[in-house]
Length: 326
Length: 303
Image (cartoon, rainbow over the protein chains, first blue to last red):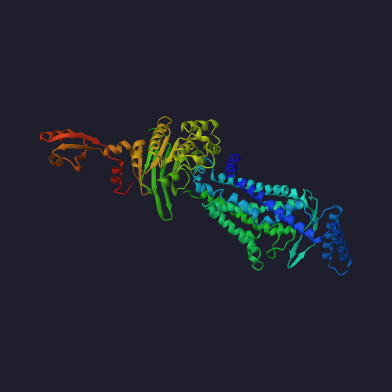
């Protein structure tokens, strides 16, 4: 099996797919870094000459004042206390919350690329994994070796998992390395709020707590890896079913973009939550953004994605081992 | 041919929807022979070959390669098989050598030195380290054969091996196939829609038409059965009327053509000479397989 995976990786490598992807990320990260930098600069100009420490001090006093007022619900009070702890930490550790370091950039980058950019890059690798062998005719040589068909497909899938891991790691390393030049490389320990959930219309803050940024980022990259793997698996299935790589890419692209559009308009179409493409923004659950459809949670989305991926794998393997090759 | 067959096909059928594509084909192939698989385009040659190499699942029937059933012992059966189905399609972005390495990795019984052997065998030389995308068709055909020979197969299946080659390439391919059968004792199965091809390189031939085999025989026997005598005589009209009394005669320009009958041919000649006809030329002629095919299939069109 090792040798088969070696073959698949060699082909991927020689087709320069991974190289192109790295190039795309390496070109986009400086672009985003510059955008982020401009934003920070504008905020700073708006504040004028006021020292950020004075500003933060002021905010802390405000929060304390609000806490001391008696007419306040318990969970809101608890939330404000956590906010207070966060602000105090920034002040004590001399962290300017308005001037992000490279880890913050990584976090923002990954949160914004989880539902479209990274799945697209994964798609580029997965789309022609099987269909290119069919359209190039090399599948006939591949399947007339003393190797069972399911082993050949499994080697391709393992190569896909490795590529997904590589793409996610590369985007982490590149976004950290490149943005650090501008923002500095510190900020791993910065505390961030997490644990939000929604109940009906309201944001439930009962479980909100602080975790250090490195832990936060690790969680987000785990989720990104999972999302990419699911999108990769579905693309892989299409690649088994269709001979044309262009068709595979087209269908997958349409699905992903439809997901991005649907997320903004399906709040009243409840059963849309079972579609894989509206469940891709897993990082929103950590940062506490509102879900596109009521009743969605991290666990729910993970299960929906998992079911889609397993179905995709079952279809891929059944079709590939049974089909007649013409 | 008392050896066990290198390939044994028994009652192979393929039905797609309600249509019978292949209607029960059986034949045996033996080591050291070149077997021609002949039929017009669309007769089912490629479908049959794809069923033999495991790309298409037969609706019924069995395929044994070296005695091993490809349905139940796929891995063992495939170790004895090398094939090129249709065009020799390899990875254009890899070099020839990398392509060979790629396929060698798929069978752990292939040692590294076998790669050098097959490259030598097909005489690829230094071009082996160029990208396949830069190869000519002839070069790719050689690499395809090198790839097929990697696993030291007992059975080599080549689908239309001379398709697209220039005359020199065709000749070279033909000699190479004869060499593999005679010196390396391989069993080679060659499909073609060109009768002249099969006639020149095969020992035995199966003729397939509309999904069934209509004849399996040695090329020699098939031809001998149809051997003719060509006469050139003066005056032609007199010779023709005389010959018509004893046998069937067809006229083709200045020649008269009759069946070849070894016991009678001397008598016919004497008869002509006694009647004052001058026999200028008298020779036997093998019919082209084209004629034969038309006769066997009842006039189905062929290139």
